[in-house]
Image 1 (cartoon, rainbow, N blue to C red):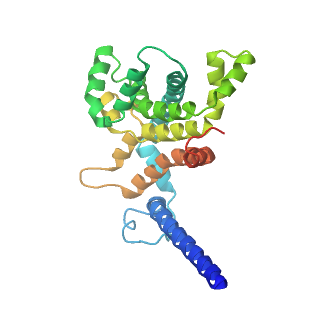
Image 2 (cartoon, rainbow, N blue to C red; image 1 turned 90 degrees about the horizontal axis):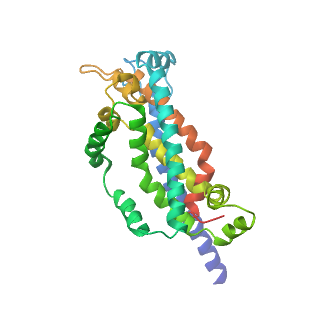
Image 3 (cartoon, helix red, strand yellow; image 1 turned 30 degrees about the horizontal axis):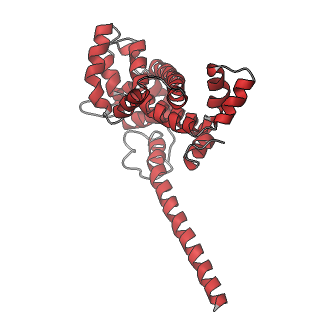
Length: 284
């Protein structure tokens, strides 16, 4: 009976593992197929993109990337998006980490009310803030400026970032801060030398989340910018969509170029992201 029980449990364990892996593989394939189709379609022609449904095209048209870069003016827009994303992510990391550390460690009047206000802002959908942002930028004479767009995007990502980092700092042992004070660190020194290095997994999540948010932003850019030379990369993709015809190979090439930087950022920070998610933002 014991042997049968052992065999039964082993078979059950293997069956469950097989089912779990099959499910995960199916989810992975579902996520990867659109990306693969996008890359493959970027190497086809306008005539064959919907006729040739194979994953390996008969002819590779790498010139689509050149035409997409030139026709869409991707060079200028690409630099704009890199600049906006970098400034916004750095701004959010610095401001949210300082604010989260203050909310977690310092006692000051109105702390709870301020934190609740930040959390309440998470419940407001992003399009719901477009009108007040537009009016505010107009009054400050910052509309149709790069700094106005950067400040708006920093504002959009602050609430979630502060929440994630405060949750982490709340669990950080205070003994580490006491040791840093003995070594002569002030409050900013503890934030820089102790809190931020330990928060790498959460910071990776904050960086990727906000970089993806800024990189893919389109509607807010159209509202804020009038000057075409200030627009981000997403606007260039509309170049290939006309009223009567859409240049699908060039559009797919443009989408591939657009997706590549975020994929690279995610791959570089994957270790920290997985650590932050699996450990639930625990210290260490």
